Each structure stands twice: as structure tokens, then as C-alpha cells.
Image (cartoon, rainbow over all chains, first blue to last red):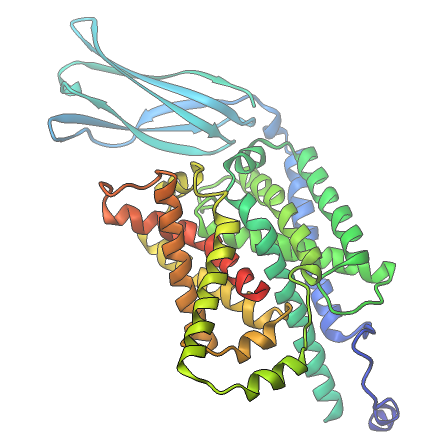
Length: 144
Length: 292
């Protein structure tokens, strides 16, 4: 029966006429709609998530052992935004104090830190930071 | 049996339409992919701005699909345009995710917020490209007259060399048009810092694949002419690789011209930068060969 119907309609459609509702078109439409629905749902989730409305919460810490190369001392660090909103132009600084006096100073600027994002880097000193007191802190940021 | 072949044809047509759409997306969207301001806009976008980006993308796609689209059909009704716009957006989103992952702008450590923002804002130009695909590089799709004329030519060596030179010239023109705008910017340097060597191999493979799809699978104008093209690099695969190398050399010269590279720089830096700029240059080169 199906064969008969097909043979009845057994002429090819003209090139410029769309063959509507083929299984292929339907399947790709379902997949495309699902992709779009997931994206919209994720954006909706972000919009409803209360955490995303909290201000940036920036923490800076050492992320590994100090190492020496070519007469310089490298202090690896990581900075993370545990708050909700994105922070822009995050300024991190490191001070090396010996006998209560700041003898070296390092700074770094991170362009963007989204919620939950972690960035890594290193401060470089010419004197061994292990011989003094090293303090790391985030000094400033701005909201985009 | 007839039904099976009909289904197979429908799947093939749909596959080719999607490939054509994706290639249109790459041609239109790749310059904005190499624009760090778009990454930043995405990184800081609010959920409301993201929804607006989706909506804007859909409306533009709908308007374009009413007139252009990524299919060969001419009788586009409103319902067709709506369905194709959903597909255009989905194709744009998938291509953007793949490209941003390839360029290491999306990694497993990137927060969801940032991924969504970057993808949605980069996907809009890709979606426009998808919806314009049928209009891009438009021309005589099946010029049988030219075919018979070309077949009657004898394949003399000088003709092969001329055809090869013409291919190289067309690749260079296309590569220049797309990559010349990107070469002087800081993006190549920034991307090079983020992309590790193993990812460079993936970028080379992606450049070949996209280039091949644009020239030989997307069904743009002159595709059949390209398949019949004479010259030293006759086979589609060898032509793709040879023209990619031309694009790579063109990328290196563009970077040298804008003093982004100098002869004092290590060869690894030359290689990294050239491969990164070689991706848009290769896509432009492919469009160039179709246009000539």
C-alpha cells in the first residue's frame, strides 16, 4: 500500500520547492530546539540563582613552593572570586618585609574574575622571600 | 526500497544544508571570534543581557531566513523561517562552543556564567552567518557549459601551472581579506599564551576540516568547478593541505608586516602565531578560491 502511494507520488519535487516535514528535518529541529531550551534554561538558572547577586569575594593565597631561577625568586599565587558578581581589573599585591621594613613590592592585575573563577600567577623577587615576611593581598577591583 | 532511498536523500540534503549553514557561520563569525572585547562583554554579561542576545540572534536569523537562509529552497514560508531560525541558532551555538574550546577560551575550569556569556555573544555573528549562508559566495552553481569547455582543454603543463598560480593567488586574496584585520591586534598574542602545543595540532586539523567543508561540501557556488579544477593540486585533500600552507605563510607575513613577529623571535613563537592566525586565514583562503 505504501509502495503504491509512493509510486503514485513517484516524481521528484522541483529543486526550488521545499519538501516539508521529512524525518530528517523533524529530527534536526527537535535536536536544535533541545539545545536552545537547555541554553535558555541555564540562563534562567543563572538569573534565579541568588548567589549571582552577591558582590565579589576575592581571596588570594600562595599556590605552591617558592622556587629560584636565574637568581630570581618566584612566589606562585592563586586568586579566586568566591562571590557572585564578576570583578574587573583585580589588583593583587605582594610585599616582602625584612625587619619590619618593606624591601620589595610586587603587583599584578587580573582583567576579569567571574564568579568561581580562579587565576594563577607568580610574583618575582630579587631577594629570597623565605628570609623575610611575605604578605599577599587583593588591593582593589572594579565592577564591570 | 524507494522509501529508503528517499529517506537517505532527505538526510543527505539536511546534512549538506547544515554543513552549508555552519560554513557560512565560520565565514561571517570568525573575525569576531578573534576579538577579545566580545569575550569580555560575554564574561560580564547579566542573565538578562544573555537572554536579549538569544532573542536578538533569533530575530535577525528569522529576518534573514525569510530572504536568504542556509538552504537551496526558494519558497520559504513563515513556519519554515521559524524552524530554520531555531536551527541557525543551534548551529551557531555549537560552532561557537567548538571554536572557543579550540582556542582555550572555554576550559573545564571556566565558570558556567562566563561560558554562557561568551558563547551567546559570539554565537550571534555565527548565527547571522548561518542564516546568510545561501547568499554567501553566490554564483552559477552548476555551469555545465563551462564544464564541457574545460573538459575540452588539453591538460598542458603550462595550464596546470597557471591553474595552480590562480589557486594560490585566490587563496592569498581570501586570506588577506579575513586575516589582515586580525593580524595587528593583540588577540593572536593572547591566544598563543593560552593555547598549549597539543591544541595547536587540533587547530591545524580544524583549519583543514573547515577549509575542506567550505570548498568541497558546503555547496557554495563554484563547488563543482573546484572539483574539476586542473593544476598541480588536483585532489580536494591535497588542494586543501596545499592552500592551508599558503594561508599559513600568508599569516606569517601579515604578522611580520605588523611587527607582531620579528626575526629575533624564536621559531616556536612564529609557529604558534602563524597557526593561530592560519585558522581565519585558511577560512578566508577557502572563500577566495570559491570566489575566483
